Image 1 (tube, rainbow over the protein chains, first blue to last red):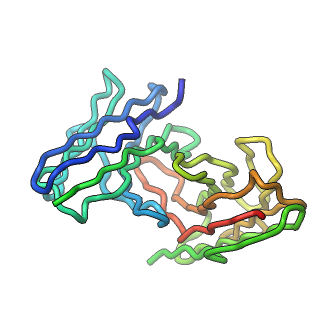
Image 2: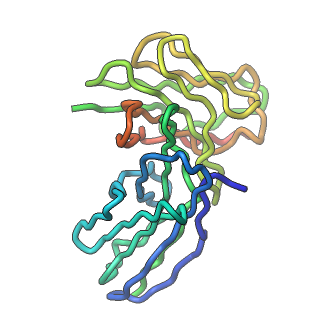
Image 3: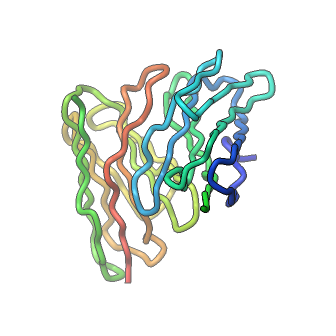
Length: 110
Length: 113
């Protein structure tokens, strides 16, 4: 079983739609969680951290469910510019090595 | 502020040739450093990580090696490239403590021909 799993998609949605991605992780000792965005042929960039209480940044909401070992990302009112691959990242305590999911591709169309 | 530099951005190398990719970090000390590879349409695979000068951990046995000759310098090398070494190589750093994210260099797109 992979440490971090994501549905690769693609998720093909119209502008203005709400879309949600899930990510599951296998290491119950994981301590830190993040969502990154990667544009085509570019490096990944931090989108947002995921806190135990959940957090919101504009149209983006991230949540963590430790009991079920998954994190989610919700994007409201999708824009064309949201088209990218969204990577789930889990960091375990001790080593603090970021482990990446394969990424979920989002395509927002007019 | 912290910055990370990785070069070159693109590289085309023949099979059997050597490789050296360099990454440097500025604005921080004693960072954790990482080399990842991303094959086309696939996720990021951790190749090497380092928690200090001269300390290298390899995650995947392969045709590559890494070195950290200085605190903020991380080098990825190969003596003889294989076709399967083609991919997008990313250097990253983190503070190596809880709740801190990783920051990436611009990446090197390597094509072995």
